[in-house]
Structures are given as C-alpha cells and as structure tokens.
Length: 236
Length: 281
Image 1 (cartoon, rainbow over the protein chains, first blue to last red):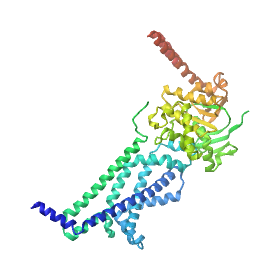
Image 2 (image 1 turned 60 degrees about the vertical axis):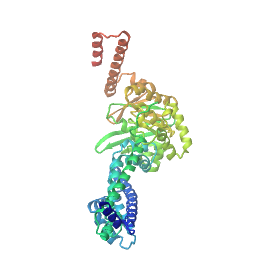
Image 3 (image 1 turned 90 degrees about the vertical axis):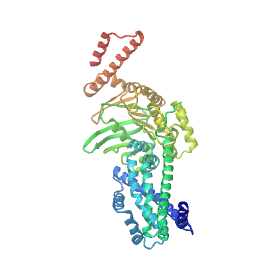
C-alpha cells in the first residue's frame, strides 16, 4: 500500500526522536540568522554613515579607509571561506559555534547592508540635512532623526532581500559542524539512508520561514509608507 | 539706531576657482527687513546661506552676538543656527514626520522644551497662519503654499532673532504666492528682523526697510525702497529694474484686458495688439 509506505518512511525519518534534529536545528538557524541581522544592521549603519559623511565632508579619512577595506574583503571572498577562517583562525579559542556563526554572518551581512544603507542616505534630498542644520540640530542629530529614518524607508525592500539571503546562507554552518536546520536534515538522511523526506521537509521549512519574513516586511513597509509618503489626499 | 544683530565684513566665498562673493559688507539691525534683489547668479542666495553658515565663507567675518561665527567651533555654530530661522525655496519639511512633529522637533531636541509645551506653542503658531487643522497631517498632504507656511512656523517655533528667507515663493504656483507673502508681511509688522532673497518686487517695495542690489558677487546699490525703486538709475541696477518694470507693466496690461473681457465679454483685436506692443517694449 502506498499510504502505508509513506507512513513507514515518515516513521523512519522523524520517529525515535529524530524530529528533534530538525526542531533544534531550526532553533539554531533562527538564532544565528536573527542575531546576525541585528549585528549586520549595526555594522551596516556605522559603515554607511562613515562612508557617506566622508564622501560629503571629507571627515574620518582613517575610518573611511578601514571601512573600504572591510567592504572590499568581505564582498570579495566567499561566505564559506570567511566562516572557516573565523572558526579555525580568528576565533580558534572560542568554544561557542553559535557565537562564531553569528559573528561571521553578522560581519558578512554588515558589508552588504552598508552599501544598501549608503544608497538610501545618498537618495535623500540635501535640503533635508540643510533644514535640520538650519534649525540648530547637529550633524549627527540630523543624520539619526531626519536622514536615516527616510533612508531606511526607501531601501527597505533591498534590506529585506538581504535579510532573506542571509537567513538561507546560514545553511552552510554545517562546515563548522554546527547543527542547524539544513545539517539536521542531513544527519537524518545519513542515519536513515532516506533522501526525499528529510531534504524536502528542510526545504519546506526554509520556504515557510522566508514567506513569513516577507509577509512581515510587507506589513512594515505598508506601515512606514502610511506614515508620510504617498498618503492619499484627505483635505478636510 | 537699533542694535546690530549681524555685522558682516568683507565676506568672500569661492566654489573652486569661481568667486561667487567678492567681499560683501553690511549690517543687519534689529527690526530691519532687508530684501536682496538682483539677477540670478548674482550671489544673493549664497550670501544668505553664508549668514547661517550653511555655506562656509572663504574669507571675511560675520559677527553675531559678539562672536565671529565664521571661525567658531561646531558647537557654537549649532547654537547660532538655532537662533536664526531659515525658510527655503523648496520648503524642506521632513516628510516622515507630522506637521506637529516637524514644528516641535527642534524646540524639543535643541531647546529641551517639554513635549506638551512645545505642542501648545506649535498649535498657537499654526493658528496664526490658519493651519491648525493640519497639525496631524503629513507634509505630502499639503499644498505648496501650506507647506511654506508650515516651514515658516517651524522656524518661528525656535524663537529666532532673525529670519532668513531664500526665495520663499519661487517654487509656488502663482495663486499660492499671496498667502505666503501675507504671513511674511505679518511677521515684518510684528517686528521680526528679516533678510529676504526674492524676485517679488512688490513685496520689496511694500515691506522692506532696506533693499540691497547684488550683481556679480558685490553689493552694487543699497537704499530704502523709495531710493531704489522710485529714482532713475544708471548701469546694471537701471537695466535690472527696467526689465522688472517691463514685466510689471505687461502684467498690469494683461490684468486690464482680462478685467475688461470679464466685464463686457469681448476684447477687440486692436486692444490686443496694443497690449502686445506694450509687452514688446
């Protein structure tokens, strides 16, 4: 019977507590991805502000140089290689693989987010900075209260895309023997010699994650759009 | 004579090799309404933007509150700017904030005014320009004239000692120019010190206490509106005013025709020709 064989397969792959590989793996994936997004955002903001301030006023020559090296190295080498270098060389003495993964992915994503955010900052009319400064606000106050909120709103779709790429890219943490969702599925395959169900399930879970995330981003985008730009005229 | 607010001495500004301001000197006294006129590219906007250091002068001094702000440190510059309001040609309202937040942002952040107090004041100012019902709207929901009135209120909320206007009506549709000029006239009558760059000659004539004529980065002529507008002038000022008057005359003729057409429903060909000739002159 077909149903019986599917049920057996299911039992084989996820029974005897094997489902825990996926469940725990999912936890690791989410932990690494979300923490790396936050770290990447922080680094990205920093790098973007340094770069655009330097481009406009010529300040921070040294910080700008360091930032440029950071962007060049990170964007010029493969993620897997960066992960391995972080694990085997830079953070050799660190025990927590999750922490190592968060740092490697956060630093990697920061470089991409930096360029996205810099594009956003550049897209804002210079008159906004002038208006802020003319009111007596400092450069940094104007940057954080006036420029960045508008810049983020403008580049939210690109940022969301970067988050999605990052979330899926974490599936390579198996290289440093960290058991995430993908690696969990792979372990089940190696124990059961069954390929279809473990991998298709893993793929499905990633898909659901990304779709949920896309949906949330869409909601955020609509919310931000309704506070300000493109509001329907409602003169009273 | 009233106290001097801004004393500008031999102010120079170059962009690369291009010298835009060639050593300007003047004083802005308390309660004055100084209107700067001149052809485009004469440096009047740059001059205005140097006064609150949106442009860093290349040379010269600007003394405000007994400090030479040209060489002042960043902190002093910020506090000086907070004492000077500026209204831009393109309004530059903050699109991500409501009208109320646009107005209260600087008083709260720079003056550390409590939220309730800042909002109360914002409402009062908005009532003055007839826009209190827009307090919770966003800039995109306003017309150009309304945006500029809000921009003026945003500057006023900081209680500036002087207001700088950089072609405040140049980006407006003609029917909205009046409402903005009315607010500015109201300010002038209430004793606000103002420096205005504008092409609105009627405003200059009616409201200014002093008119500066700039050309090629220098102040070519200076005087009361009567001295500038009602006396014949040689050279560039005469040429400039001739052009402006020509526009005024043409405008008046067109107005006359439209008025007549509205009254009896038709205009003769001869009348139209007469108008066209007067414009060509």
